[in-house]
Length: 203
Image (cartoon, rainbow, N blue to C red; front, top):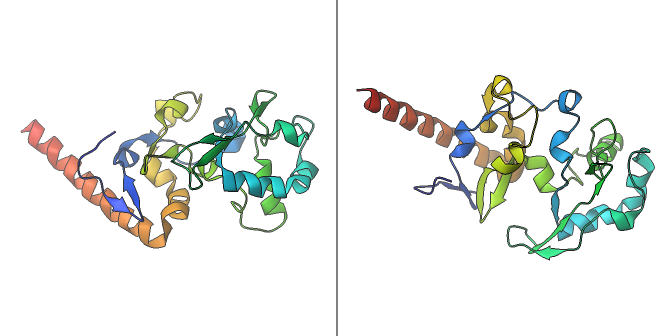
């Protein structure tokens, strides 16, 4: 991770890797069947509680590849300062995928919000929304370890964009409209700096 002169936007430090890490042009569940969800995700304690509150609604939209036993949905809570509450609760795996991932590769937690005409990410855990971005010690950076496991998103022939360009909507959700404008300016500055360094090295 690059450490020098990291910009702080809306309380988060920005790792410039987000501007240069190659990524797919857009997420397409029809191609990968939600592969990034195969391993589950850590939710904040508050997010976990929100999901449990609507368990009956979630169960109603689950298919036969998912478990409707609520006791099998989450791991034991653990302390983690990267989460707002200081407590992280991991989702369990069932049939080789996150308990909330249906057999079509769609997230049931997001699906029910859309079915009920709510904001699509109303119940969805932040780290699910942000992938392949993570917040690590207050720094927005890339989850390269998780990304390396992917069979589609990590292939160079499919990486025709950058994580920043692909995930602007997700990043804006985290840092707000003003924050994304600052990041766009930062991205331009970073790109200019990189181009200048390349020019100097060639000369």
